[in-house]
Length: 163
Image 1 (tube, rainbow, N blue to C red):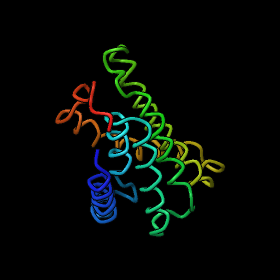
Image 2 (image 1 turned 60 degrees about the vertical axis):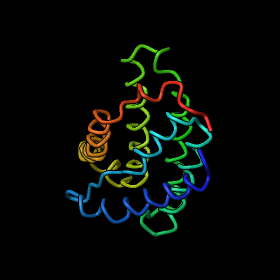
Image 3 (image 1 turned 135 degrees about the vertical axis):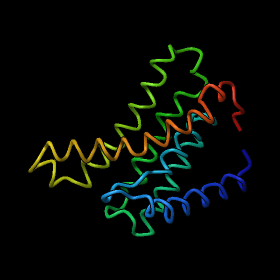
């Protein structure tokens, strides 16, 4: 992937997240288009591009004052990039159920870490409300990923170009 194209796509995804996600929020729960982009980038191009995309998008999020904890977005998006990059070229090697459970687990763990740090008071006071918040935050983004899977399934990325 050319770096100019990569940077332009990163900027476009950030702007979409910054402007469109606020319009689509339901009771302060927003879809996370950046995590979807990082997941797809990592599975198609590997860990290096995934971590770079995750760190840059997380840094932009933290610098734009969208996130309240500086470094949280960079860390959690880099986490997605690294571990989803391990799934590159694994679609035909793993049982499809395990493959899909792996990326679902990566996204769910990302949102668990994010919600745990962001809503720590809720975790300490009302665990059921924390689980609901985590479930709805994960589910809203997961709905967009599942719709995108109907259009661009991960099986298309098997043996995709590496750079």
